[in-house]
Figure 1: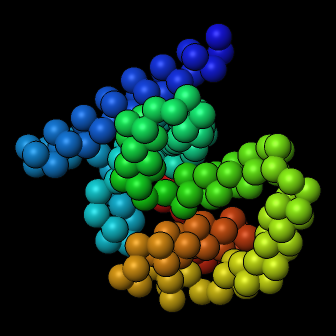
Figure 2: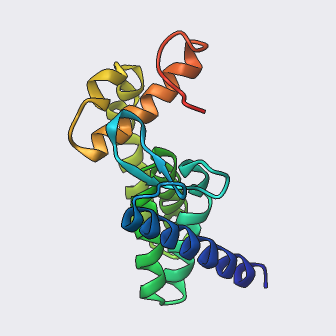
Length: 168
């Protein structure tokens, strides 16, 4: 029952947000969208006014729709995730996918491979969080720019606001 109610509520909220985004783009009135930092264009407004607040909703919506074999809902939630342009949403999706794969009925070999892939990726990921955000946010690649925004937020927290940026 909870899963059904959650999926319906998430679907309704996502449809409203996507319609608001489309309406804002079509009319030029951007009351229902969020302007991205670092020149990233428009972002899907989140449930609490912040695009990263979609982090618990988008991954859950994608995975529940996939499990229920509803391709149109998978596409809708994926589109909302892409329009949010949020590193928090992307990170929640990747970590949720890893957990789902680890607790699923896959063979022990596949689970071992996933853990080893994550362990192997760690030395490549950790230096990203010690780099300079300006090197990333100036990129024209949206994925690199998203990593830069995440790095900038991490730097803001680590330095107590002396460097980096957290617009909230």
